[in-house]
View 1: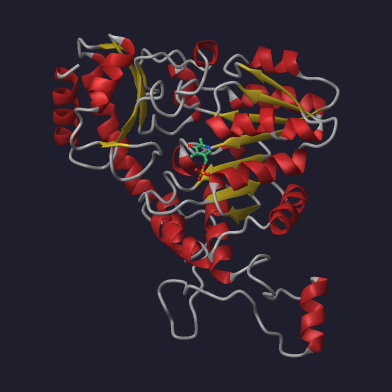
View 2 (view 1 turned 90 degrees about the horizontal axis):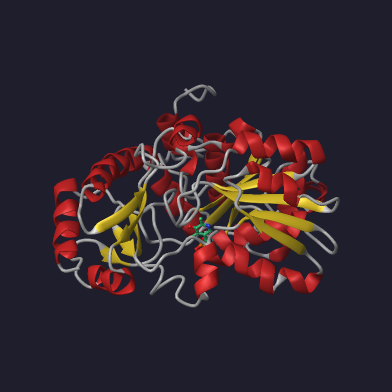
Length: 393
Ligand SMILES: *Cc1c(COP(=O)(O)O)cnc(C)c1O
């Protein structure tokens, strides 16, 4: 039963599984660097692309291709390109759509390195860039120049939780023939499918929700159509940021439970958000599932659920943030997100500590900001832990 309109969880379990001649329930790990040809003509046909055959693992491998197929199905895209990390996905997209004299428009609150490499590395190759608050689509429209070739977004953004109206930005991009890419890591395809809004490229750090077990670093790019896929694929192959078959196999295993993991984490996050909203030591909270979120209505339209990521601010700034970090017992004090375990971090003393006060202000990072990735533990235990850590603030 592999017809196309099976549900999300059915696809997550079954899509792309390559049973072998023994009837294995799971695609084997093809832990091989190369594949032999039957004869010279077979090799020639594979290289000419006249016959689908495996040549070399950097170019393609059955275990990796299965994962690419499954994630592309879940995102409703044409094809997936698996890569070694989320940052490999970002770089593959930048290298494909940017170049000498080209201009990038991007959201100002991005995953740190996704912005830093533009300003430190791509600038050396003549790439121009403008960072705007994309939650206001007019700012995107105003930033466009004749040489703009890529609009790059994260929604909800990290760690401000700002939501960008994808339909509005795509409408602006279409007028100027500009490619739009969305980093969909925070939502995963379970909660948001950017192709529904006309986006061209979706990427993921599969290190986060898609694998979901904090044991793999991995990335994926999904193209809307064949023309875009055919531009991206050779960049990955030639840059050599391919995935490893074992990494692909573990990620495929994690993907099978994506829906039920997010359902549980989100159910917990809604309760945790309500607890935090009413706690006297909490100054503010940003969570798309609370009516107090500035883009609450847009979030409801664009996302299938509010997700498991919460940002909140403590009264008392830097010291309060550090004290809370030093007193959690169940939650892990760690960066990353989207795993089965609750993770907590304090950007002002951790991920964003090197930014100037002005850069922190622009990125929306106040000294008391805490970022929480809610896991699948028993919610009473998560709330008990946060409550006792807040008592020490
Ligand atoms: C973690 C993350 C990345 C980078 O992914 P890696 O797998 O760590 O290379 C990119 N974008 C977002 C939103 C992330 O959270």
